[in-house]
Image 1 (cartoon, rainbow, N blue to C red):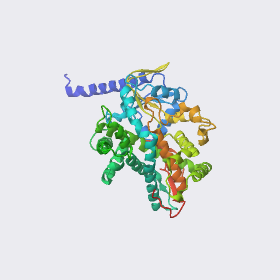
Image 2: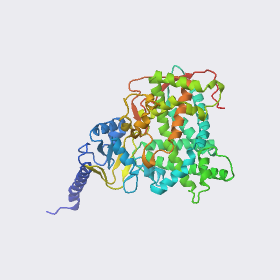
Image 3: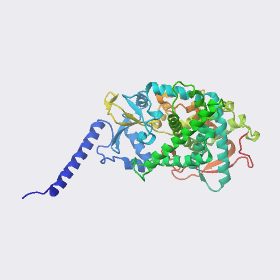
Image 4: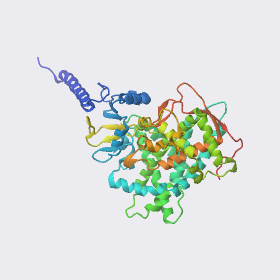
Length: 490
């Protein structure tokens, strides 16, 4: 009896699929080797669903699995991943960012989302040259200029928050802080070159980008990831237009009034200046790095100060001894430097709750990470700044700003464990700006606002959005400390 093709096809198809699934499992086990991690993984998706549904639990389990060996493995959307708990192994990865070792990617599917021409994908001399050209953006003079802009935006948003608040009804600070930071970034980075209409479109596109960060990476019409990628293209185009306007103004001899001005003031004299589109892309990198990380830190500062009233009292005492809001004089750069304890609080907030808990890299080639394990090419590696923050430090589970005071200086003693701003050639170039922003926010918030948390079960648990925030979006009751106080900056 003859067998038709149609009757033979299904068994062959089943066998082919079975062989592919077997190959996938064997490939995963070969890459996993002796490391802790799941023995079997769901085809292609791996453990992506548990990670998306509860990222906090997923990464906590990865950390527990890595407790003894310093690293653990898993499988997400067809990609083999490593979670790095060991501080020494994290430093080994950070110090080997080069074409034949590890590539910083910022996001597991970052190149699709950000594009190839991005600061975080640069290596060697090109990267060093760009960081040299970026340096004028973060001088004392530049940071002093930004401070006034930051203060103006923060005060205007405090005024809005308080005008809409009810002492009996809590408000959620997460989206409010996000909007505050987006307005700050727009004002500091692009200054007068963004019109009100451009800002509104910018806000819409940045929200699409944020949603896409947490979505499955399906680059198809109608999917959040596609909308995010197109939004990034529009955001970069908008910033490129700001670069062009700034360049014209700096060529005319004007004084710099924002970050892009400080950049263009030097860039116009470079023998081979970057294109406006390239700088627009780099500005977006800055905005992305500053925006969500800063929002996370502002929220945790409120949470931790509320739960530590003794520390809150010390911050208020220090600030009031240096700055009187009733004089309506702005906080000056010299005052910021005098807020020693407040800066220690800011540093401890960043240590205790590092906004970007992990810094994803991809292995460009096989790399011998330990005596017993070689990272396979193509592996996505997640060094954990969060886990390092709870290693080495004295009583690391305790929120203790004094650890950064002159008597203990744990930021120097345990410098290797303080990885919130990264390490190696790609260490955050704007960390002084980020700390200034957090110190300024704390000083203004505790001086001008009375606040208390709306406490519910699990409200302080960590949620990923994609940086970490309080699970309840930081619900607080707020009221003005000085009724009738004018929030306009001088």
